[in-house]
Image 1 (cartoon, rainbow, N blue to C red):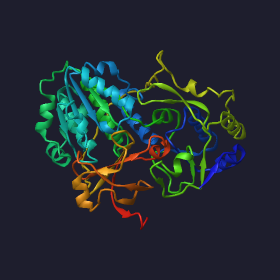
Image 2: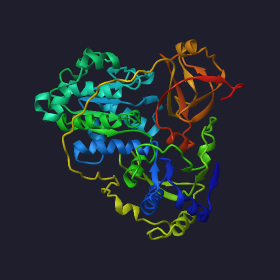
Image 3: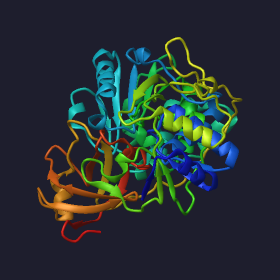
Length: 451
């Protein structure tokens, strides 16, 4: 894997590249350059995370008429029902965790936490915990839709889709009892305020389009406030600025990402399949769009504004090169007075949906999350250790999502079930940003017999 930092050599490689795989850590400035490369040279762009974000946005826009949900976090503090769905509280970064904690402290109504894993930190803060099966988020969303919507008040497509749902099957396969949902919605009339936090497990789900449609229907027909909450770096910015492929080509030879984060995540993780070239032209100062739409300034210690500007000139792109950096990308996006991205308006329509099968995951599983104080080691329950025959302190090697991990296993008595937690070091961003699924199956070898 060769790191390319010389603009003239990078330009020659980019001119003939069939596809560029993009990290979601890149800045808006870099994303805009890559989009201009696509327009001029026909290069396909793919990002494991940002492509899924774009899939969510496109499906959501069909129903809502806007490119992404941008609810008011202040209103969430007044919710009669506050739902956390598809995120693990202990694995959230500090700022996001503090924001959710504040809401839970001020909340006049009840809080519901939906996830395949219990979270001991949340036990005293929530009224209902609904544990669903791994991968069944589409089925769970359909059950929420069924529980919260008045079918008679919906459009014909939505009404027909809901009436066609096999609630008994979905309830059984998702492991979510109908009585659990009844307890959640009890006493909620049409005027009650509902806020639903959409976590990154949802954004990274294989059936993200179907989930996005159902989420938009909750917003449209029930007035549910939808909020995106995750640490997916600049996924929203990249998905807004770039035209992305929904899946990667069979052969990936070119990766655009901060190189230092590819070789090792600080906890011994590396790519199994090497890219032929890794391009790294991060500017010294740039910007990203957080998942709540806020424009944020970022700095790269190793960044080089001149290198990116030279690359633009070498490729003869139609961009005005200024110092410190060209700002044309900002003309493609609109921000309000508080520097929050304004969603693009589109033509809304009614869309039918169908949830037929719920995927089944058996055996030991991994949950890949952000490295936090509560999730800083590879750890699993006593049951997980017993079934996998892992010992506390044992050194192992395993593969997940095209990455090879070297870990030391720790038993965590606060965890239950057959899902272990594999933290990805936040200091090393791109390994996390290239990781396109939060759950995966688990097989391992001892460190002395590596993959």
